[in-house]
Image 1 (cartoon, rainbow, N blue to C red):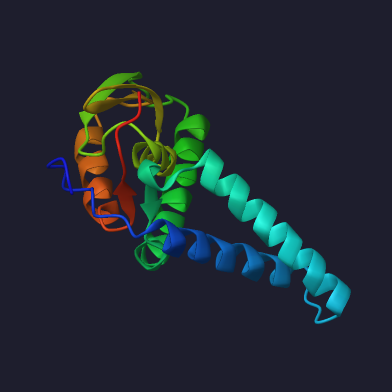
Image 2 (image 1 turned 180 degrees about the vertical axis):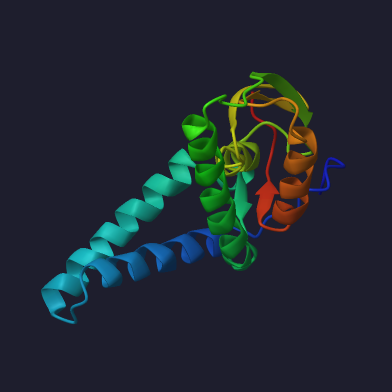
Length: 173
């Protein structure tokens, strides 16, 4: 059931959520401790159960979720934006005239307050010369090095790219 938000999708059942998280935590354990020794597998299983239980308490299913496949497809763009942002800030810092027109830009977003919006704000903090500093019910406030840049359009473009990756849950206050 959705509340009309284009970013909200029906959630899977609690057992599937727990199983999926448990598998990810066990995979992480195996990456960190690549061993098939019985003692290592036992402690990995105990750590997996503890991590899964904690994650279900701290981040309930209703809070939203991430589509890892869609997020993985976003990684090359994210890395490129990170490089462009770093070069833009370095260029401005090294420029004799430091072309800056700092200010605040309020950008409307479709993600409701909660996990998906927080993840979106963290990702868009890597847009060249911008940093999310606050929010309203339907918008994020960005501090920008140059308000003459098309910040609102860049945020809207990033939102379109991330719509399939960040799935909103219930609204949080």
